[in-house]
Image (cartoon, rainbow, N blue to C red):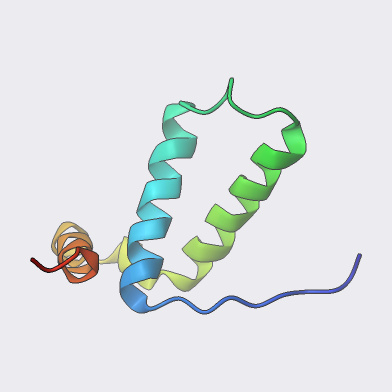
Length: 77
């Protein structure tokens, strides 16, 4: 299976999704959720792909950048 697919994310989506997947994987909260280890592997792989593109995780202002991204993505009232 060599076929690859691309998905485009905004910078804000990339930051928030990367952080969310890290928290989910780190907490092991979904360990009993997966029906097959392949599902978990796919999530780990997605986290790794996002981390490669997310240079903000190394930023000294990461907390601020994450909050800014979350604020940008929230529904506006």
